[in-house]
Length: 372
Image (spheres, rainbow, N blue to C red):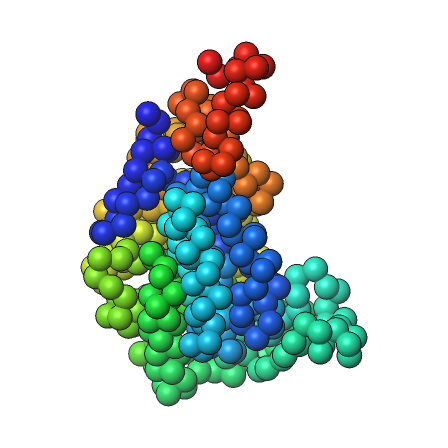
């Protein structure tokens, strides 16, 4: 049996294999509620054999959303449609995670496939258009693009409200039945903004030194861990480097990972970037070396970033560069990627196919003389 398709136990959760669907924003929600698109979009990954499916960046407060089309978990009424998705993922053998997020100064931006805010008045009603003034560590816009507003700098009361928002959302995630939550601290969003000197120009206890800039994330982590069940693992996604001179570095991330472990985090999901001017150039396996470095802090990691070939994924695990392998765009392209990778790595194995398809696929392969 390949390492990729061996189980992994995190606290009281055992994943059927090491494949993960990374969070992918769908910009298809209204007022933060999951709908049939999310159910079908996510359900197919469980049918395709993934071990863990993590839902998209989910706003912990209304103003935390990247756009008005994002999922939210600031209201108890948002629990039920998420629970429906969780139940289906579980029924198909996958574990269910949700990424709790706050966009900070990158909030209230246009839907990804639109040309700015080009909604007609009818569109605004149909799609539940909303806008608001973002918040951030400092009153500095992400860039000069008019899609990004100048945010309001969070005061102490605003910071405490935001931390409580993460904790309250974690409580709702537990009620919905999720197996894990992932705190989003990557990609230039609010927590990453606190971590990075590129966006954090504060002079209080949340700015200045690395220790101070890490404070907000560690307080969010403590608040979530305090309400998240002890037997359930906690994940944090980070940008291991901003890729910009004077920004957050991989050396900073190794220190942060050690701190996160001591605060009850079980896995760090290692990504990168999120600020303008990054020197990071996407290519096959381009973030694996970052995962390997963060793992040196003694914490499990998820490698992500244009990992497409099963044998590459297996080699990453064999070399100890990560403990899990995440796909995003690759999963969109092939929701059955784990099933196909399982055949590549482990031969004539059909256990990941849904029971409704298992025998049919085996009979097809036998008729064609493959995977005997």
